[in-house]
Length: 456
Image (cartoon, rainbow, N blue to C red; front, top):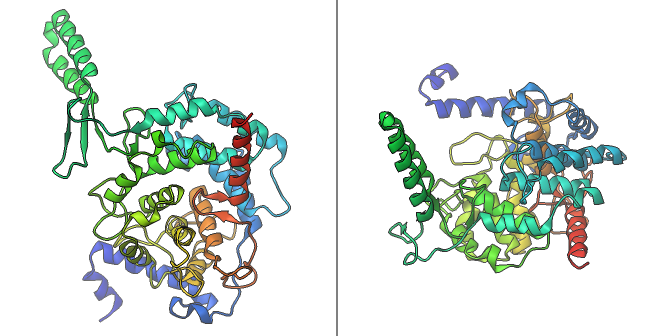
């Protein structure tokens, strides 16, 4: 049967997979690389370090129009750019004056009541707060560290925390398993009803309009709340991303351990593990690489890795590496994507941080060489920047996470020994922290600074 005839019988999912596999294999051919024989590779593999450095540096002064949809992601630009520059720097480093420009941007993004906003004068948002804090750690200067008001930051984190409500004290509802909780704010409800009654008396002709307004305001006074989670922002969604962001920020600011911040978190993470073994954003959702990363990183920070079904999770995780492409996908039956080199790949590094037995012959539990081949042969652009998969364009997001995944893929449990396709990429990078997504030195420096500041 011809290739065209085969494609006619394929579903759209199968066809997309076939096209992606073929495009990646085409990238491997000039290098004579095959995932099934990765250990036999003897050719050259290069990471274009200086080109990727210049790619990120160029975007400091002008962000292309293609990033317009991320207009509320200012802290992410600060994090991605500084992180790529930190990972790829050699003899180069940002000047002090350039770092101060980042400091001025981050000052504008800090909310007066704590936390960072996605854009100036916006709402404080936990995910923006994470990226803002990682950018501060990357800058590593006093002016950057001092942006953060630790007291207000903790108050913000506590406002975002969803705690266990007493069902007998407040109008609230759980599902049959006692997990999903709806909390009804009676004070807001009564205030909304009183305001609606006044409006109805004043403008009886707008009955339909008032009905719509009433339903919207009543709806906004009721929100779903998973105990042990954090809202991303006031009245915002709660999922494992916000849990991870709250814990990493708390760790760097020396706010842990603190029961007021950590109560219920482990139980909620346990409830997010699916029948496949991975973790979804909330209970009863599909397992996903990004949320699984957040789950494992959070458990590492709480020293609670053994609280989950680790065997089931490892099975799900190892199945995320694509057999022909070498990279990872994020969910079952999805396409390979270089960003999961970090979101999925870093988990293997974290697992051995929590349990040294979760390795194989001192190596990680995946084909590290094949992942490196996918990143280096299929995702690098010769003018700088890395891409999702062949056919896509380079961007900061994929350059950051593909590079982070590449660094971590060289790790073994043997001192002085690394896994690398060739000596050209071996030991090019500093020690990278898989939990925080930045260089380990930057984590330690930030933690030390805030510890000393608290003890003043």
